[in-house]
Image 1 (tube, one colour):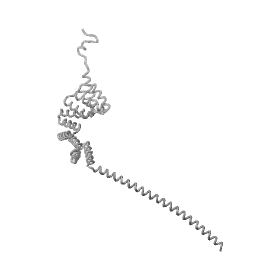
Image 2 (tube, one colour):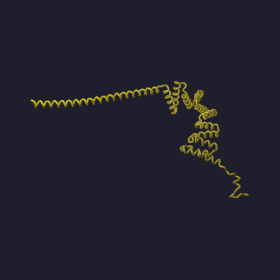
Image 3 (cartoon, rainbow, N blue to C red):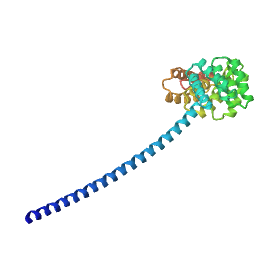
Image 4 (spheres, helix red, strand yellow):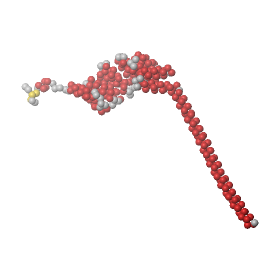
Length: 280
Protein backbone atom coordinates (compact mmCIF):
# COMPACT_ATOMS: atom_id res chain seq x y z
CA UNK A 1 0.00 0.00 0.00
CA UNK A 2 1.90 3.02 -1.25
CA UNK A 3 -0.14 5.49 0.81
CA UNK A 4 0.80 3.67 4.04
CA UNK A 5 4.46 3.54 2.98
CA UNK A 6 4.62 7.30 2.70
CA UNK A 7 3.09 7.68 6.20
CA UNK A 8 5.59 5.23 7.65
CA UNK A 9 8.45 7.19 6.13
CA UNK A 10 7.14 10.39 7.66
CA UNK A 11 6.91 8.72 11.08
CA UNK A 12 10.50 7.45 10.73
CA UNK A 13 11.73 10.92 9.86
CA UNK A 14 9.90 12.43 12.87
CA UNK A 15 11.31 9.75 15.13
CA UNK A 16 14.83 10.49 13.87
CA UNK A 17 14.31 14.19 14.47
CA UNK A 18 13.07 13.57 18.03
CA UNK A 19 15.93 11.18 18.77
CA UNK A 20 18.45 13.66 17.39
CA UNK A 21 16.94 16.49 19.45
CA UNK A 22 16.98 14.34 22.59
CA UNK A 23 20.58 13.31 21.99
CA UNK A 24 21.54 16.95 21.56
CA UNK A 25 19.78 18.00 24.79
CA UNK A 26 21.23 15.06 26.68
CA UNK A 27 24.71 15.84 25.38
CA UNK A 28 24.34 19.53 26.37
CA UNK A 29 23.05 18.57 29.79
CA UNK A 30 25.93 16.16 30.26
CA UNK A 31 28.41 18.79 29.21
CA UNK A 32 26.87 21.27 31.63
CA UNK A 33 26.92 18.68 34.41
CA UNK A 34 30.50 17.77 33.72
CA UNK A 35 31.51 21.43 33.68
CA UNK A 36 29.68 22.07 36.95
CA UNK A 37 31.29 19.01 38.49
CA UNK A 38 34.72 20.18 37.34
CA UNK A 39 34.09 23.59 38.95
CA UNK A 40 32.87 21.96 42.15
CA UNK A 41 35.87 19.65 42.32
CA UNK A 42 38.24 22.57 41.69
CA UNK A 43 36.53 24.59 44.40
CA UNK A 44 36.75 21.74 46.90
CA UNK A 45 40.41 21.16 46.07
CA UNK A 46 41.20 24.86 46.35
CA UNK A 47 39.29 25.24 49.60
CA UNK A 48 40.86 22.09 50.92
CA UNK A 49 44.34 23.39 50.16
CA UNK A 50 43.51 26.73 51.77
CA UNK A 51 42.16 24.99 54.86
CA UNK A 52 45.24 22.80 54.97
CA UNK A 53 47.54 25.81 54.73
CA UNK A 54 45.51 27.65 57.39
CA UNK A 55 45.68 24.70 59.78
CA UNK A 56 49.40 24.41 59.13
CA UNK A 57 50.00 28.07 59.96
CA UNK A 58 47.76 27.76 63.02
CA UNK A 59 49.66 24.69 64.14
CA UNK A 60 52.99 26.53 63.80
CA UNK A 61 51.59 29.49 65.73
CA UNK A 62 50.32 27.22 68.48
CA UNK A 63 53.66 25.48 68.64
CA UNK A 64 55.46 28.83 68.90
CA UNK A 65 53.09 30.05 71.62
CA UNK A 66 53.40 26.78 73.49
CA UNK A 67 57.17 26.99 73.22
CA UNK A 68 57.17 30.49 74.64
CA UNK A 69 54.77 29.61 77.43
CA UNK A 70 56.70 26.52 78.47
CA UNK A 71 60.17 28.03 78.12
CA UNK A 72 62.19 28.70 81.29
CA UNK A 73 62.11 32.45 80.56
CA UNK A 74 58.32 32.41 80.36
CA UNK A 75 58.03 30.49 83.63
CA UNK A 76 60.41 32.93 85.32
CA UNK A 77 58.46 35.95 84.05
CA UNK A 78 55.21 34.38 85.23
CA UNK A 79 56.68 33.73 88.69
CA UNK A 80 57.93 37.31 88.94
CA UNK A 81 54.53 38.67 87.95
CA UNK A 82 52.82 36.47 90.54
CA UNK A 83 55.32 37.55 93.19
CA UNK A 84 54.78 41.23 92.39
CA UNK A 85 50.99 40.89 92.57
CA UNK A 86 51.21 39.03 95.88
CA UNK A 87 53.51 41.73 97.25
CA UNK A 88 51.16 44.54 96.22
CA UNK A 89 48.25 42.64 97.80
CA UNK A 90 50.17 42.30 101.06
CA UNK A 91 50.65 38.53 100.79
CA UNK A 92 54.31 38.84 101.69
CA UNK A 93 54.96 35.18 102.53
CA UNK A 94 53.61 34.14 99.15
CA UNK A 95 55.67 36.80 97.39
CA UNK A 96 58.79 35.65 99.23
CA UNK A 97 58.21 32.07 98.09
CA UNK A 98 57.80 33.11 94.45
CA UNK A 99 60.97 35.22 94.48
CA UNK A 100 62.93 32.37 96.08
CA UNK A 101 61.64 29.97 93.43
CA UNK A 102 62.93 32.31 90.71
CA UNK A 103 66.33 32.43 92.39
CA UNK A 104 66.37 28.65 92.72
CA UNK A 105 66.03 28.45 88.93
CA UNK A 106 68.40 31.33 88.23
CA UNK A 107 70.65 32.42 91.14
CA UNK A 108 71.75 35.54 89.23
CA UNK A 109 68.32 37.06 88.54
CA UNK A 110 68.76 40.56 90.01
CA UNK A 111 65.09 41.55 89.69
CA UNK A 112 64.16 38.70 92.02
CA UNK A 113 66.75 39.88 94.56
CA UNK A 114 65.30 43.39 94.41
CA UNK A 115 61.78 42.12 95.01
CA UNK A 116 62.91 39.84 97.82
CA UNK A 117 64.74 42.71 99.56
CA UNK A 118 61.60 44.85 99.37
CA UNK A 119 59.56 42.02 100.90
CA UNK A 120 62.03 41.70 103.80
CA UNK A 121 61.96 45.47 104.24
CA UNK A 122 58.16 45.43 104.51
CA UNK A 123 58.40 42.55 106.98
CA UNK A 124 60.84 44.69 109.03
CA UNK A 125 63.50 42.03 108.57
CA UNK A 126 66.02 44.80 108.06
CA UNK A 127 69.22 42.77 108.30
CA UNK A 128 68.11 40.39 105.55
CA UNK A 129 67.05 43.33 103.41
CA UNK A 130 70.35 45.14 104.00
CA UNK A 131 72.41 42.12 102.94
CA UNK A 132 70.49 41.81 99.68
CA UNK A 133 70.68 45.54 98.87
CA UNK A 134 74.43 45.53 99.50
CA UNK A 135 74.77 42.44 97.28
CA UNK A 136 72.85 44.25 94.53
CA UNK A 137 75.17 47.25 94.77
CA UNK A 138 78.19 44.96 94.34
CA UNK A 139 76.51 43.44 91.29
CA UNK A 140 75.93 46.85 89.74
CA UNK A 141 72.61 47.60 91.38
CA UNK A 142 70.67 50.74 90.58
CA UNK A 143 69.52 53.72 92.62
CA UNK A 144 66.71 51.53 93.98
CA UNK A 145 69.36 49.74 96.02
CA UNK A 146 70.43 53.04 97.61
CA UNK A 147 66.78 53.86 98.26
CA UNK A 148 66.34 50.45 99.89
CA UNK A 149 69.39 50.96 102.09
CA UNK A 150 68.08 54.39 103.08
CA UNK A 151 64.75 52.93 104.16
CA UNK A 152 66.45 50.09 106.02
CA UNK A 153 68.69 52.54 107.90
CA UNK A 154 65.66 54.70 108.70
CA UNK A 155 63.79 51.67 110.00
CA UNK A 156 66.71 50.80 112.24
CA UNK A 157 66.97 54.36 113.55
CA UNK A 158 70.29 55.14 111.86
CA UNK A 159 69.13 58.52 110.60
CA UNK A 160 72.49 59.98 109.53
CA UNK A 161 73.21 56.90 107.44
CA UNK A 162 69.71 57.07 105.99
CA UNK A 163 70.33 60.70 105.02
CA UNK A 164 73.49 59.76 103.09
CA UNK A 165 71.71 56.99 101.19
CA UNK A 166 68.78 59.30 100.35
CA UNK A 167 71.19 61.89 98.94
CA UNK A 168 72.78 59.21 96.73
CA UNK A 169 69.32 58.21 95.55
CA UNK A 170 68.42 61.81 94.72
CA UNK A 171 71.63 62.20 92.71
CA UNK A 172 70.69 59.15 90.63
CA UNK A 173 66.96 59.90 90.47
CA UNK A 174 66.72 63.68 90.17
CA UNK A 175 63.16 63.56 88.81
CA UNK A 176 61.74 61.42 91.63
CA UNK A 177 59.80 63.26 94.33
CA UNK A 178 59.51 60.42 96.86
CA UNK A 179 63.21 60.37 97.94
CA UNK A 180 63.02 64.13 98.64
CA UNK A 181 59.91 63.65 100.75
CA UNK A 182 61.36 60.73 102.72
CA UNK A 183 64.61 62.64 103.30
CA UNK A 184 62.56 65.58 104.57
CA UNK A 185 61.01 63.26 107.13
CA UNK A 186 64.48 62.16 108.29
CA UNK A 187 65.66 65.77 108.56
CA UNK A 188 62.60 66.69 110.60
CA UNK A 189 63.37 63.87 113.03
CA UNK A 190 66.91 65.26 113.31
CA UNK A 191 65.45 68.68 114.17
CA UNK A 192 66.69 70.30 110.96
CA UNK A 193 63.32 71.71 109.91
CA UNK A 194 64.71 74.34 107.53
CA UNK A 195 66.52 71.66 105.49
CA UNK A 196 63.41 69.49 105.68
CA UNK A 197 61.35 72.33 104.19
CA UNK A 198 63.89 72.71 101.37
CA UNK A 199 63.62 69.01 100.48
CA UNK A 200 59.82 69.15 100.65
CA UNK A 201 59.83 72.17 98.37
CA UNK A 202 61.94 70.18 95.88
CA UNK A 203 59.42 67.34 96.04
CA UNK A 204 56.55 69.80 95.58
CA UNK A 205 58.21 71.27 92.51
CA UNK A 206 58.28 67.78 90.96
CA UNK A 207 54.72 66.91 91.99
CA UNK A 208 52.89 70.18 92.72
CA UNK A 209 49.47 68.59 93.30
CA UNK A 210 50.53 65.67 95.47
CA UNK A 211 48.33 65.92 98.62
CA UNK A 212 50.86 64.16 100.85
CA UNK A 213 53.63 66.55 99.83
CA UNK A 214 51.37 69.59 100.23
CA UNK A 215 50.27 68.44 103.70
CA UNK A 216 53.88 68.05 104.87
CA UNK A 217 54.88 71.34 103.25
CA UNK A 218 52.18 73.19 105.21
CA UNK A 219 53.35 71.61 108.48
CA UNK A 220 56.99 72.47 107.86
CA UNK A 221 56.14 76.01 106.79
CA UNK A 222 54.34 76.50 110.09
CA UNK A 223 57.30 75.04 112.00
CA UNK A 224 59.63 77.43 110.18
CA UNK A 225 57.43 80.44 110.92
CA UNK A 226 56.27 81.05 107.34
CA UNK A 227 52.47 81.54 107.49
CA UNK A 228 52.25 83.00 103.98
CA UNK A 229 53.93 79.95 102.42
CA UNK A 230 51.81 77.66 104.58
CA UNK A 231 48.57 79.38 103.55
CA UNK A 232 49.44 79.24 99.85
CA UNK A 233 50.13 75.51 100.05
CA UNK A 234 46.97 74.98 102.12
CA UNK A 235 44.87 76.67 99.43
CA UNK A 236 46.22 74.22 96.84
CA UNK A 237 45.63 71.32 99.22
CA UNK A 238 41.97 72.39 99.57
CA UNK A 239 41.57 72.20 95.81
CA UNK A 240 43.25 68.82 95.22
CA UNK A 241 42.06 67.07 98.39
CA UNK A 242 39.12 68.87 99.99
CA UNK A 243 38.29 65.79 102.09
CA UNK A 244 41.54 66.07 104.06
CA UNK A 245 40.44 66.17 107.70
CA UNK A 246 43.58 68.06 108.77
CA UNK A 247 42.70 71.18 106.77
CA UNK A 248 40.69 72.97 109.55
CA UNK A 249 43.40 72.23 112.11
CA UNK A 250 46.18 73.44 109.78
CA UNK A 251 44.20 76.59 108.95
CA UNK A 252 43.82 77.33 112.66
CA UNK A 253 47.55 76.87 113.27
CA UNK A 254 48.34 79.23 110.41
CA UNK A 255 46.04 81.90 111.89
CA UNK A 256 47.70 81.49 115.29
CA UNK A 257 51.16 81.82 113.73
CA UNK A 258 50.14 84.89 111.76
CA UNK A 259 48.68 86.48 114.87
CA UNK A 260 51.80 85.68 116.83
CA UNK A 261 54.06 87.21 114.19
CA UNK A 262 51.86 90.28 113.75
CA UNK A 263 53.87 93.38 114.73
CA UNK A 264 52.68 95.04 117.97
CA UNK A 265 52.94 98.70 118.89
CA UNK A 266 55.20 99.38 121.83
CA UNK A 267 53.74 100.35 125.15
CA UNK A 268 55.62 103.64 125.19
CA UNK A 269 53.93 104.71 121.97
CA UNK A 270 50.47 103.79 123.24
CA UNK A 271 51.01 105.69 126.47
CA UNK A 272 52.41 108.76 124.77
CA UNK A 273 49.10 109.59 123.20
CA UNK A 274 45.65 110.25 124.66
CA UNK A 275 42.71 110.90 122.41
CA UNK A 276 45.08 111.88 119.67
CA UNK A 277 46.87 114.48 121.83
CA UNK A 278 50.38 113.99 123.25
CA UNK A 279 50.65 113.93 127.02
CA UNK A 280 53.01 116.41 128.78
